[in-house]
Amino acid sequence: MLNIVAPIAGKSYFFDNEKDGFPKPFIEICGKTMLEHFVKNYENVKNKRFIFILKEEDVKRYHLDDAINVLTNNQSKIIILKNETQGMVCSVLMAIDEINLNDSLLIVNMDQIFEYDLNEVISELSLNDAGVLSFESVHPRWAYVKCDKNNFVLEAFEKKPVSKNAIAGFYYFNKADFFVKSAFDMIKKDVNY
Image 1: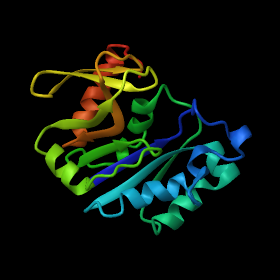
Image 2 (image 1 turned 180 degrees about the horizontal axis):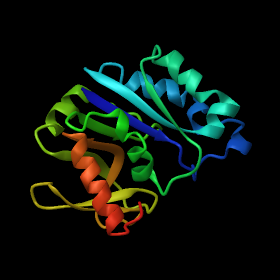
Image 3 (image 1 turned 90 degrees about the horizontal axis):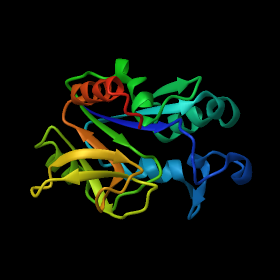
């Protein structure tokens, strides 16, 4: 089973609920919400389960959970956070009780769409313990990875361009346990992402 976790509980630095009228998942692009584009992008991924992490405010005020249930035929697990966490890693840890730690885990940004066969991408990434999709950039809005000559990730940095390998909001772990151990190591080292 592939657990696809979409944390949508963080602050958006590019969208303003008050100015835009609705939270980012409801921003419309070509007549469909970002949320609709996101679910459609992953519809052909095999043997998956969505887990969405939402802000309580977005659930109460905009019924984001209901929209997700409609789009996924009530097949998603929804985690509702009452308070803001210290970032994506901490938010995803809030869902860990819902995931078999031996199953694979894919943590994804909801606001990025991929024009790849995601089954092929996931199959290729599954040959390793973990992996990310990246693109070329040096803008400090992204997370980055430093890689060796074989493209194995050596280090990851948040909003610090240490290479041209910007992470495309797609973090794969062959076993969810690899993520959990790495997340707790990060917390112990007081690295805040």
